[in-house]
Length: 432
Image (tube, rainbow, N blue to C red; front, side, top):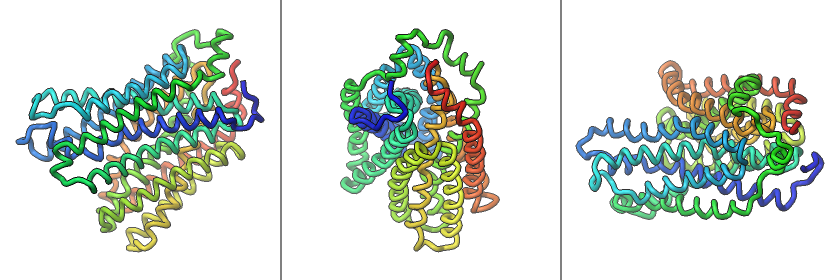
């Protein structure tokens, strides 16, 4: 077992690198679908289907991946707490690579008819189940490998990898569309990013073979301290306060990612009159700053405490996004890039959120507790946030900033709770 004063070793760095690489590729596989939604919709549904209905169908299949996250996460976490972290860590990337590759090579509606959208839905559900286990599993895996002194930085590194996967998806999609004609993309070019994602997933799974089971799980197994009842039952019976805190900080994470990163480019195009290319370029810069912010937030949290840094970054997101969005609506588009970069940096609070959740559960049921809280909150808040913001826009064009500020207030309250119960949460990371 590592001591709290241990430095980040070369082996720790390898574990973090391979875990972050796998997380990036899994998130790339999960989001690349949305970048080619229009092409996939045209190929996997009848040509005489109304366009609005085709859009509903294709985005409904996309949403199915989110709905599958909680179930997949809970099942993989259950076995991760009983059989080992590494096994599920390997299985999650396998479960993502197979359907991604399958989508890239499967026949379209013209060839197999109604079976095409049904198969597409099936593969998408498997992707959702995989991503539901990957992120919580990765956070548990790396934090149980490194010293307690580096828990938040390990989580920040993993979060940076997940965000990098979104950026990779955007860059690959941009490159495909820039290097091919619309006809080539429609005929065969759309398959390339899916095949690439599947192949890279198998390569990463091979590289993960060299990772070792976590010292924490190995010690619990040797001492016969694994959960003596269903892990989820123990979570719901004995750790509801931890579940609530973890769900609250996950809500902050979803609002930050969904509103400030995923929705903002289209909001700027609609409300501020920005052209798509400019808004997407600024968005890419913001994503890079999120990656930097994740690493910085994690390092600071290890030094000054998760609660304090979560509170500061929550305030930073609320204030910076308010200034940014209000200035864009006022027409100050010359400030687009610097202001959006600041928002992206503070959105790096996503690097410290998992550290709070990981420390909220004892080791025997940690994977299950984190996965249940994270995926349930993500399914609820991640799925409803676009709808809520869209409805609020009818009342006030500044509603996205209001929503972010409100959720960041939840982040500050959560930070206060974490500081108040910091000693209890720290004790939860130590096996009995």
